[in-house]
Length: 396
Image (cartoon, rainbow, N blue to C red; front, top):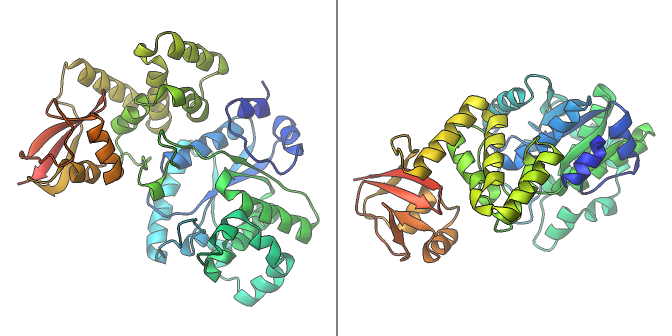
């Protein structure tokens, strides 16, 4: 398959700005960019789904530029639920360094990193309005989906201006770095097209963009920090074992989709695993391959082997001494729902309640179905589903 055909087969292309993108990806060598705002000191699996696509483009010979938004992060992009909390410049700088280290490792140093604060910090408000603002019609901005959805509840001028600033990022990178393609999650489509419009009006030239579908979990939620279900790339925040456990517990209905998105396994190998899901689902070969490949790419072969061995040992009952330990901030006597949320075993109390009522939680090998169940010991083993085990310590 060509690169474009492979991306399509994997379900990694949702919106495209022009049919020319297929030829651009297959025949040219383009400089492309992907961006994120440093809203935490680590990226998470939601980001990783896009970064894997960037790695595919880089492997095909295209040049990647990663923009970490030190300027746009000071404002925050519009969300359907409301305005983001303002983050201080000092905190953003700290977050920038954390993300920079992670991305450099993921690309083995073969990536150019830029910070839009570098070209925005000395750009005066009046100059920006004269140079950039005059080219974008207000009606054009109002028609952007994310802005339009916020009109009834209200949107601040800062949030409203976000798409214009990100559009200028694309124009700047087009001029200074020769960037002609932007790739991002589908929630960034409005910002991508603003940049393309600016390049067309200011430079009289064409630039391109495509989006990838957002990756959802089994409940239909976007995987990310704002949904409370983030799996962090920083292994101090989310252990390789926990990432392994998350993916090995993937539902049969999602596992092939995740294999296409998150791994570099070939079409032939994934189709072989797809057959195993249908013929011998009890072996969970697809889930094991998915979990191993994700941890290997994020943290290396050694961590992937350790996570696999730990999982097999725990599942077989051979050894529990290497079980992950979670130190809870709660005291003995707390209820099971609060503990599940505090330890990150469930993203919310409503989800914890559902897990308990449906028999998905065991404490010290005893299945718990009462949401009011009280923890009476300072150390317990909590099992979620069939394969996720955590030793939890509570304060006495």
